[in-house]
Every structure is written in C-alpha cells, then in structure tokens.
Image (cartoon, rainbow, N blue to C red; front, side, top):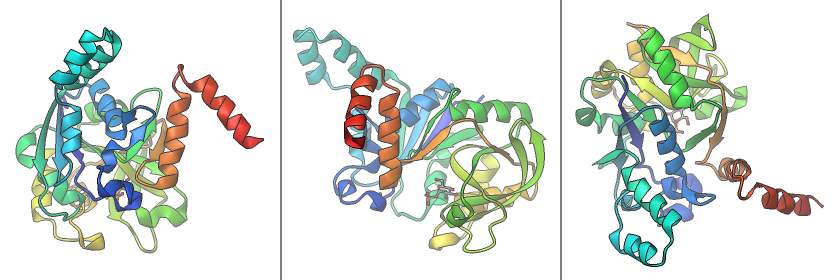
Length: 286
Ligand code: G1P
C-alpha cells in the first residue's frame, strides 16, 4: 500500500516572478485555495496518509496553511461562521504533513532524495504541485491501481507537441501493455534533440526504494542538476518501469498561461461560481 507522498516545494518559482519573490508558488490562488491544496486533495483521495514536503527558506506559508490557527477559530466560532470554521479546522486534519528542508537547489532528484529517510523502504508517490489535473478518477489513484497490478514504478505520461519535448522528461516506449499502460525502455531529461517519443513525464510518480538508492549515486545531468529522470532511467535498465497515459486534463500552473487556464477551468467546476463566471466571459467575448 502506498501511504506516503513526497511533494517537492523548494524551487524559486522564477517563471512566476514577481509574485514568487514573496509568496511560494505553491501558494498561488486557484479560486479560493492555494494550488498545492488541490494536489494534496488528490493525494488524500488516493489513500495517501502522510505528505512529506521538501521545502526551502521562505516556504513557511505552506506549513502555516495546514496548521491550527486558534485565534481565527475562536473568532469564527464567536461570530457563528460555522462553515468557515469547519473548513479551517478540516485543513489541519486533512493528512499528516511533515517537512524537510532542501538546503541547496540541486535539482528535482536531489529534492526527492532529501525525503529518503522519511520514506523508508515502502513504495511512495511523488507529486509535482505545478501540475494540476482535472480527471474523473484522480490521476494519482489511476497510477496507484497500475502499481498494484504490476508491482513496479509507474510514471504519469502524456503526449505533448514534439517541439515541447525539450521542456520535459521524455520516455522511450518498449511495449504497449493495453489499458493505456506502457512498459518503458528508457527516458531522457529535457532532450535537446532527437526525443525518443512525444510522451512526456508529467508530475505524478509511484516509485520504489531502489530509485532513492540510485539517486544517491546520480551525478548532475540536464541543466547541471541531479535529475529524478536519470535515476529512474538507471533502474529501468534492470527492472520493469511503466508509464501510464492517464485519463484527465493537465494544467501547468508553473507557467503564467497554464496557471490562467487552470483558474478558468477550476472556476468552471464550481457550482457556486460557474454561471456568473460564464456571464463575465461572454461579456469579454463581445
Ligand atoms: C520536472 C521533471 C520532468 C517532468 C516535468 C513535468 O521538470 O524533471 O522530467 O517532465 O517536471 O512537469 P521541471 O518542470 O521541474 O523542469
């Protein structure tokens, strides 16, 4: 059973400056909640019980968001704002959240490795909170099902335009196993040319302990950083690693336009806002 998820949240968020000068990019607002809260809900609905946040200096707001806030709770209670009170208390009880600091920004692989001691020997999930999804069944739950059936690491993969492959980890597919599951031959991080396919790795993974051990030995790769993709690739040479072309729509909230697209789509999911929001869009179109 997969009970723990690592959420790397230590990056500077340079693509979203100047906002991210003072506020962690994971705390950017989508309707009325920080983006990371959608990722954490996805994890909880897939049965994750413990989130390991990998943070850095100036990311304390994330921890504050999931902490109790007794002064606010008392104020809401006194003013009879029961729904708001329930919601605030609920946040702190959503799941167990622990954190570890990544003291130097040496790459995604290094960030994940910072959580190794807290993960132990169990299989675990990795959630990149920039990537948010709208799906009938949460993407992490789809990955977990595939892991349970095949007992090997599973990466979420998605077709992207070939000219965008240099922004991603890109997989080489060995075999189509049916049901949108593929056995992967290898993968390469941010290929400058000749990508092995147009299937990109996107921000959800179910991984195993041997990948953490491999990360310990992994030297700097693309962009001079320790890359998670390189460690998974090394493990794929000796055992089966899978890619799941999940059902759902992805939003890259780490980019300005991807974030705006997410705001529009997540607002449209809200019964309390949908109709008024459509009216606003129609006015703009005129
Ligand atoms: C990271 C991973 C990359 C993956 C991407 C998905 O890259 O290293 O393999 O394709 O996330 O969003 P980053 O976006 O942090 O550069």
